[in-house]
Image 1 (cartoon, chains in turn brown, green):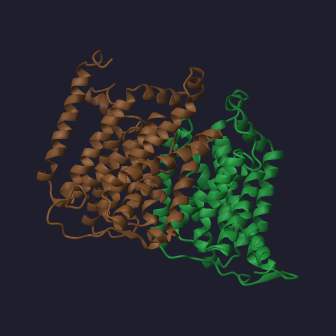
Image 2 (image 1 turned 60 degrees about the horizontal axis):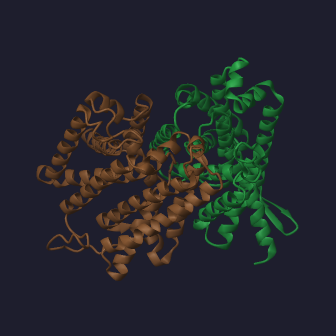
Image 3 (image 1 turned 60 degrees about the vertical axis):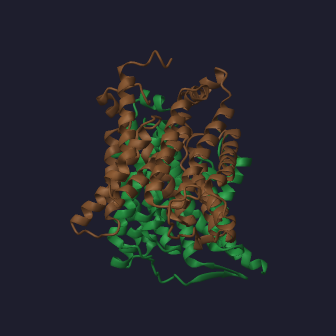
Length: 334
Length: 290
C-alpha cells in the first residue's frame, strides 16, 4: 500500500515535511522572543486541532466542547504539581485516564441513546459548560479565584518539571505536534482509521458492513480526549494560571475547532496550516490596528469575524485542499 | 423557608421560562425547517434586547408595544441573512454551517460592544416595581406581562403554521424537501421566510427579556446555549415542546438560584439536560428519534 503510492506526490510531500521540520527546529535561533511566543501559541493550536480532528475529522463526531479535555488536563496536572510536587510527565498517568473517562461518559450517554449529529455536538458543549461552572465553585481548586503555579526564576531549564524559558516550551510543543501528526498519520492508515472513515461517511452502511460502530465511536472520542488532555497540561505549565472561565469557556472550544476547519477538516496538514493562518491573522490585525492607532475594544474581533466569514464562504473545503492541489501533493495527508 | 417562598420563585421561573421558551421556539422553527443550527441565536437575542433599550430610551414606549416593530426588524434581518448567506450553506456539512454562524456571532457581539460598550443596560418601566398579590403569593407585574406576551406570540405562531397556506407550505418543506420541490414550492424563499419567523420570535422574546433582566453584549453565548438546552429538553421539532422546555429550564434556574447560588444555576440547567437525554432522549414532547 505504502510502496505503491510512493509516487512524485509522496516525494514532494516528504520534502515539504522535511523542509518545514528543519525550519521549525531552527526557529528559536531565527526569531525574537515575541515571535517565538506566537509560534508556541500556533503549535499549541496545531496540536489541539490535530487531537480534535481525530474525533470530528476522522470519525465524523462533531465535538464543540473540547475545552473540557483541555481543562481537565490542565487542572489535574496543576493540582498534582502544586499540592504534591508531582512532575507533569508523571501526572499524565492520571490526566489521560481522567480525560478518557470524561470522553467515555459523554460518548456512552450519546451513542447508547441514539444522540447523534447536532444533538451530540450540543451535549459536548453542555459537558464543557457543566465543568466550567462546577470548577468555578469547587474550593479544592480555588474555585473562581484561580489556580496558580509557582513562578520562580529558574537557573536552568527543568524539562522534567516543565519549568523554564520559552525556547524549552517551544521544543516541547513542537515535539508534541510532530508526535500528534505521526499518530494521526498512522491512525489514518490503520484498520481503526478506515472504520472511522466508514462511520463518518455513512454510519448505517458501516454497521451493515459489520463495523461495531458504537465501539469505534467510543475509541474515537477517548483517543481524541487523551491526546487533547496533554494540551491542557502544556497550557497549565506555560501560562502558570488557570481560571475556569478561561480554560473551560466555550470560546476556548471554538478556538480549537477553528484551526482544523479553516485549514481543512479531516486532513493531516489542515490543523497545522489553520493554526498558522488564524494566529497569524490575529497578530496581523493587532499590528494593523496598532499602526492606525485604533484602540477600540472589539474592533479586532470584529475584523477577525469578517475574515472568518470570507474564508468559510470562499473556501468551503478549507485552505489546505486547494493549496495541496496547487503544490501537487494531492492524495497525501488527506 | 416557608412553602410560599418556593411557590413564588417557581411561578417567577415559569413566567421567565415562557419568554425563554419563545426564544427557543425560534431556534426550533429554524432547525426544524432549514436544518441549520443557529449558533448566533443568543447574539440575535442581544440585538433585540439592545434595540428595546435604545427605542425605550428614545421614545419611552412600553416594551410591550415595542415588541411589534422589533420583531419586524428581526424578521427582515433573519430573512436577509438566510436569503444571502445561509441558503448556500444548507447543503454543506455541519461544521461548515457552524463556522459560518460562529463568525456571524463574533461579528454581532463585537459590533454591539463597539456601539454600546461593555456596561449592562436595563429598562425602567412604570410597572418595574409593581406586583400582583394573590393571598400569600406575590408575583412581579413585569414577569406576568412578559410571560403573557410570550404565550400570545407563540399562539399566533401555532395558528400561522396550522391554518395558513404559507404555514402549511413551510411545514411541507420541513417534512419532505424533495416533495416540496416537486409540487413547485419555492423552497429557498420559504427557508428565508422561516429564518425570518425564527428571528421574529427572538425579537419578541428579546424585547420581553429586558423587562426581567439586564443586557450586555457578552450575553450572547449564554442565551445561545440556553436556547439549545431548552429545545433539546423540550424536543426538537416540537413547537409546544420548546415552550415546555422553556418552563422546565426557567423553573430549574429559579430553584437553583434559591437553593444554591445564582451563579451556579447554569450547572443545574445542564444537569437537567443530561437527565432528559438519559431518560427521554427525544425530549419531553418530542417524537422518537429515528
